[in-house]
Image 1 (cartoon, helix red, strand yellow):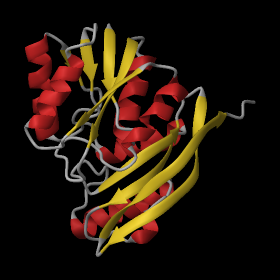
Image 2 (image 1 turned 90 degrees about the vertical axis):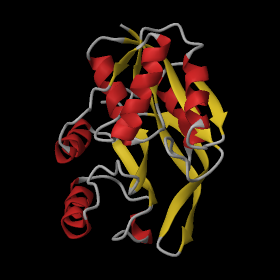
Image 3 (image 1 turned 90 degrees about the horizontal axis):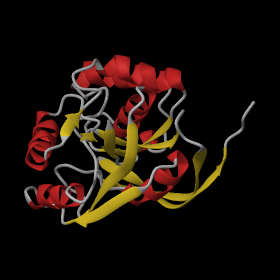
Length: 226
């Protein structure tokens, strides 16, 4: 099937993309919405512009559009972007968010696309373990829930981080996979990348009990191959 994959640069959309590529689908485009405000209902805010590097790393053309980030308007902006694409389906990284998936499903139905959600309703811990085992290099770039502190910013998602996320879930009901907006991520390398992203300059933006890592400069570099 010819597909377009919604990507934010984060782990869920990257894993969904990886799965459809491994299944033999032809992903003709990556699609990104860039919100103008931090409190977008649907889309990541910090570092979304790095999807240009993400797309170049994976070798798939990127289409993108800025959106106000206002609850209903951003959905119309997404629909307008997807309507320009000559594909059969749209891939999303939705896991448990009914808000996200139902709205993507509705847009796909209106445009005559299949809605492809390869991670839907899979266990959060299982998905995180899959990311780690496959060798995804993802870091946490934003934390927005009680239990996190500034030390989580730029932290790599590895087995120790997963253990700590499971503990935060036990104590404070934080989603292990972060789909409730508790945290956001940035993928720097993945099995489907031909090159990897290297952060050259970044700074932490922290206010009271939440914040994010703003990547100010990043480049692509060659991957070490055995």
